[in-house]
Image 1: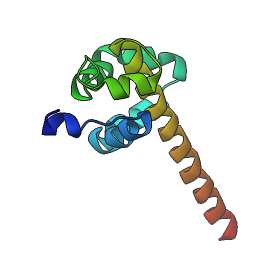
Image 2 (image 1 turned 180 degrees about the horizontal axis):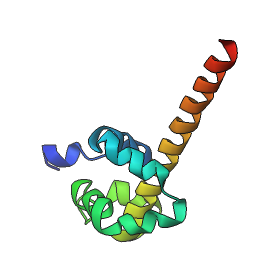
Image 3 (image 1 turned 90 degrees about the vertical axis):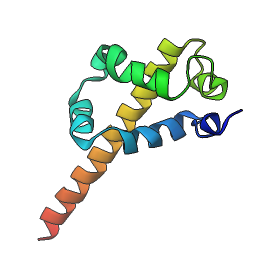
Length: 105
């Protein structure tokens, strides 16, 4: 394995953390506003980036296995869905904090 391969995430959670740092906040805002059923439309943009940069085309079998899928296309959607879910959770927590702050003011 090369040093570059050592840097690949080997779990969906690690891939999501990487995406949180790599995807600009403006794009994260667009993603969080999407319906879950619309995430498939990201296949040729974010999906290809995930496949190519996270080694899903045979270079990173650990991440491919962690998604539970047998091909890079489906694995990238699993990762995107997990990223979307994380963004949804963070948005809900942030919204709850804002509501709590308003109710104590």
